[in-house]
Image (cartoon, rainbow, N blue to C red; front, side):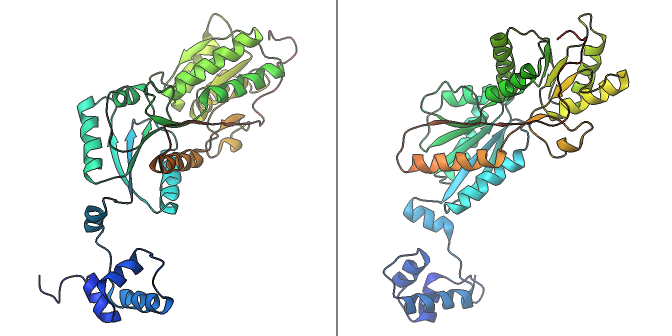
Length: 343
């Protein structure tokens, strides 16, 4: 490549500004010992020449890449874009870039090792693993890392050396069931999402625990987080030998939407005949008919807190575990059991 075609380097900036290349390096890296007039002159030369730092060379020299690796595990991660928005925004504010990779839970542990190796080959300084199922944590438990690792959206992590940040799914389920119990319901069915995921398992545990505390009873039916499974299970509730429960806690808002459609076909009115609660507070949940009572999760905060945790670990703090409390949003799909119905 001829000098005319090569991109401008630090020496070119130094010649343009009439300073040493060391001074240019100090300006580029924000060193405080540069006089304001010199800094202004160097910055003008950078803009004129269109100089950009060679991040690869800088990483090799400083052993810092200013990059956080993010591994996405699983295909059932609800609102993943919002989680990644929180990750990217917090990383950028901390002066880091994000490098994305993915690993499917059905793949081998060796594939995960290779995914992590590719990230560490890029000299990432820390890794966030956004996971929706236990197999990811089980795989991570046997691996040794040279950088801080935080698991996002996980449940109980068996490896004490791993940090995690999660929205408290069990608490969210208990909030939903407690709301129904306070209205007077005692027979509360739970239509679960896929039980291979952390979220579905934790919501089942919360539902069971809150029912047991109040002496209530309920039916458990497994779906897969889709509206189609909610529709199918809604019809199943209408035709079951046990009769309709007075309330339904759906695994998520998509399933609740399917339940609403099934109940409409069967002539079951919500909340007159059956109260209905969802989970997630998906966009538009407040515009369903009736507007859906649900549990709201702050996914942007989840991603942001994961990066903040990794930053603390980079400063030398120990592995930590953090749970974010969800929020119950009460709308029009829940009410007291109607008079004469078996509660």
